[in-house]
Image 1 (tube, rainbow, N blue to C red):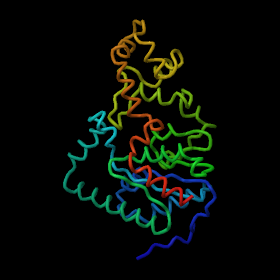
Image 2 (cartoon, one colour; image 1 turned 45 degrees about the horizontal axis):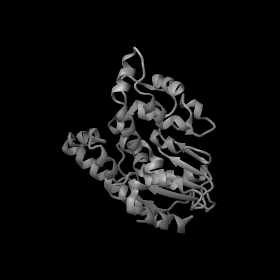
Image 3 (tube, rainbow, N blue to C red; image 1 turned 60 degrees about the vertical axis):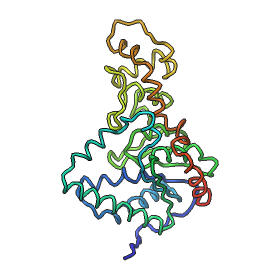
Length: 279
């Protein structure tokens, strides 16, 4: 049975783009144990497009990351372990979620909304690639819809993020409300502190406060790397000196802007063809 959307209707193309982190968004219904979320998912996306005056929408799926697994096999290994510990009932429920997500993507496609999902490619990288080619695609403004703070690496002029979990926006205008470091230092901040969700360790003993202090004193990730060994009596600086090579590995794992094209690989042509004809 076809779903009708009479409340919001089709968006009117206007050069503004809503990029939706599809699998991230549906967790709001998974946590509520609502597995028939197709209607709510599509309606929510179209409502957000209307709220942010985005006449174009693209919904992204996630296919894992061959690129990151090759350079760091432990990438997201914690999530794999968690899935392995599921009960039979939980496995069945997760399968239902995957099927409903696939059905949702087909519904978006039927409504003329592009969906992009490739095996071995993360939604983060597709979003980063689109943001970098914003002018090539003739996109005016972009709103990123995700609760994943990794996507704040993409925030810049005319590119902002909205979280459906916190209901908060991250923009250049309110950046200081979210972070103690400047936008251009956010990658350095992440490389120092790591990302537990993705199983990427930072430097032991360096949390947000210390990371901000190190950045203020030494600069970006390459300045910090070149400053090592740093003379200090503090143990966390000893850890930094001993593990400075980890910083460069973390750049490869976390820098969405620099490595998105590499991560997407041959699929970049598909993205270019679809968005070039859509927007």
